[in-house]
Length: 247
Ligand SMILES: NC(=O)c1ccc[n+]([C@@H]2O[C@H](COP(=O)([O-])OP(=O)(O)OC[C@H]3O[C@@H](n4cnc5c(N)ncnc54)[C@H](OP(=O)(O)O)[C@@H]3O)[C@@H](O)[C@H]2O)c1
Image 1 (cartoon, rainbow, N blue to C red):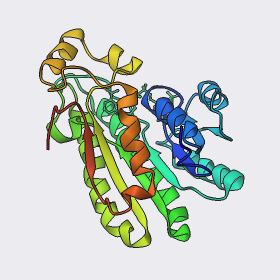
Image 2: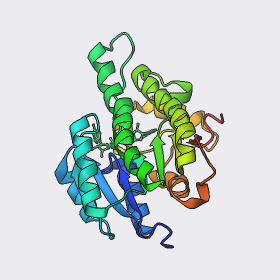
Image 3: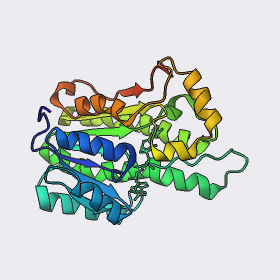
Image 4: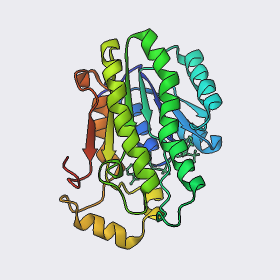
């Protein structure tokens, strides 16, 4: 595989398993040093150890400002720079609106939206000094068209999409490109255990590609948004959903 990200330092939040880990493996195969982030350090460490480049694991809850500050200082001490931040950590518990408590709402907003703010805010300071950087936010089709049982999650991911555009306007002149991706349903263990079978069947019926997404379907767009080939792409949210939304 071509080492197009040789020597880059890429932080991927929520990369101990699922989409984040698959992306980590791919970018590492393309030469990047990866910072694996998760709350469970054993899983995160095992993920980092499995990569072939000089990568590390850092225990960090992205909804904790202290954890984020600590994580960024560890990364700077080890590598001295941050080339790319991929805000991927997220939770998506299904709950109808009438059953939802305010605590349910807050816990999803705290991780999926506030966590994106916290990680970005700390890394942005570094990228401002570097006068270079790329920030990629993992949103969701739910942030664009709404998801059933997902009022909290849709609000959080819609917020991530709007945040991406607003920050991209400020950041572009500092040579920091901010973009997002909006995956459709991707067959991670979490997605398979979260969504009822009938919902997945219905989703496939409404997807022009006629299938669910695989983690590898995200590799191309993530690699591109991490590379200089995307330097003039600013504030976009790119759907990777088999044609489900087309907006
Ligand atoms: N799968 C889909 O169908 C789909 C579709 C669209 C968008 N997405 C988005 O893609 C992202 C990844 O989804 P996934 O399916 O790969 O989920 P997953 O398999 O559950 O993996 C989530 C990862 O995030 C970490 N994490 C969760 N909460 C965290 C926190 N507070 N602080 C730090 N790390 C945290 C988890 O590790 P720990 O538990 O150890 O912290 C894990 O590494 C999410 O943002 C999700 O909303 C997924």
